[in-house]
Length: 61
Image (cartoon, rainbow, N blue to C red; front, top):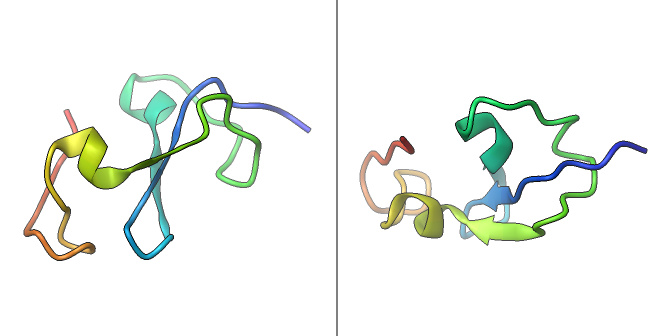
C-alpha cells in the first residue's frame, strides 16, 4: 500500500477534510492510505474551527 508524506486533516467529529500534501500542491495516494504525519485537526491547519466543526467558513491557504 502507498504511504502519504503528509498529515490527514480531520474534523472534530472524525470526518476527513483533506491532506496537507494537497494544500502544498502535491498529491496524496488517498485518504485510506497511511499518512506519515498521522492526523491533525482541521482547526490546527486553519487556526480556528471550520464550518463543519462549528466555526464559520475556514479556508486553508
